[in-house]
Length: 320
Image (cartoon, rainbow, N blue to C red; front, side, top):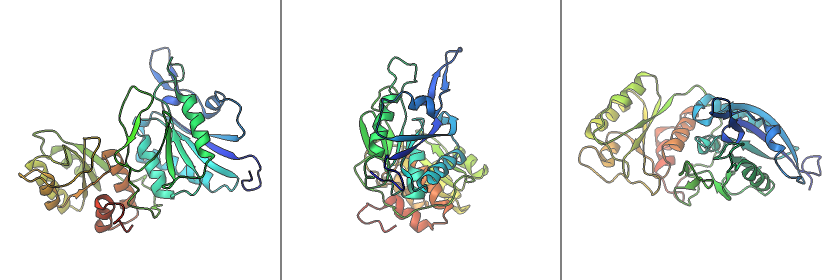
C-alpha cells in the first residue's frame, strides 16, 4: 500500500488527555499522566507506522472551545501531510462527540479520522484503552465512511453526527440518536476559539435567570437543554424572546437522549411557544453537539435561515 511516497501506511496519533491517558495518583485520583508514546507501547505489533503527537493533556470535561479548536487544528495539520493515511485522536469521553463533530464540520476530511478513548483508566482492572486504540488503528486503515469522522469505541464504529454518551460505567459507551446523515456537508473552517456559546439547562418551574446570565456574559448563541420534545416554561419563553431581541441565536434541544424532536406543544412554555418566540428547534442533535454546530455556524457567518435549516431539516431535504 502506497501513501504519498510510503509503502507502509503512516497514521498520526494525537494525544489530548482523557481517561485513556489516566492513571491513579498517590491521592487516589485518576488524571492524565500517559503520553501518546506510552499508549502506543501497549499495542501488539502492527503492519503500520504510528506517529505520536502530544496536543493536550486534559480531562475533556475541562476543554474550552479554544481547546477543541486546538485539537481540530492539529488534525487538519496532519491531514495536510501527503504521507499521512489517517488520523487517530485520543480523547476523553465526556466531550468526545463534541470535538469530533467540530473536526467533521470544519474539515469534512477525505482521509479517515477516528476518535477513541477509554471508560477505565490505564491501571484499572477493566482498562479498555488499548483495545479501543487497536480498533481505532484498524478503522483508520480503512477507506473513510460516509460522513468522514468516526468513533471507535467499545467494539463499535460510529459516525459522529447525532452521537452521544449514554453510560458512565460500561465499555460500550456511545450511541447515535438516529441513523441519519448530517444535514450540513460543506466545510465550516472558521475558528470557534473566541466564541461564547452556552448551554442552559431547564427543569420544571425554571425561569429565565440562567439564560439572561449567559447573555450578560457575552454569549452569542444559547442552546436550551429542555424537557421532553423540547419544552420548558412560559418564563423561559419570555427570556428567549428577550434574547432574540438582543441578537442572540437560541436553539432548543432536549435532555432526553433519544428520539426526534418536534415543537408541537403549547401551553405557554412548549416547543411551539419557543419557536414563536424566535428559537430554532433542534430536530436531532442533543445539547452538546447542538452547541458545537451553533458555534461553527456563527463563526462562519451563517445566516439564521441557514442555521435553522441545519438544525430543523431532515437530511433528505437539507440544502447546506
